[in-house]
Image (cartoon, rainbow, N blue to C red):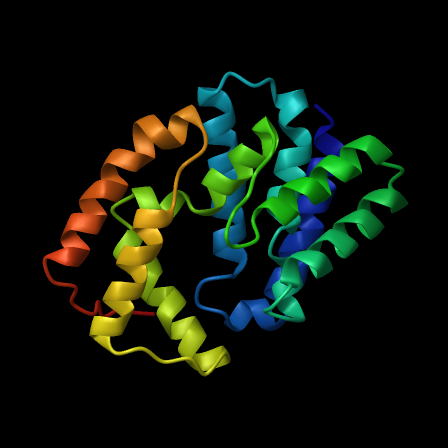
Length: 202
């Protein structure tokens, strides 16, 4: 595994995320990016994928939301552009750059992964759906949409929106199906039995 390019890219993305609009976002911020990066490692290990092979997915995880520093809608295109520009400066393999960008594009909603690597990053990006942190993360996203996109939902509308999203969503990897999906099903039941707005302390 080329630790240098991953390390250099990680430092670059951390700087960009911490010194741009992303620093003010409640959900799509540096913490989320680091979590997705770590989730890729967890899923990759479970799927028994060699770290060297996983390298483009790790790079995609670092860059996948960096476009949010400029735009919300279509931020994946901006993320791909920045990843391609950055990696090209370090003479990163062109075929691997294409994989990085394909992985970033796979995270567009609704997710449509077409490869093993794209499956991994998609599950890593929506990892929280299958954890007990779902409601906290969900509320952070709700606040972000309210503050930055001026989109507001009543508690009931937000519940319906999330139940619909969770029921349509499918995990793609064995890790997602075996480890995350059972908890996601529990989260759906909790939503249906009465969603209550969580108060999150900053």
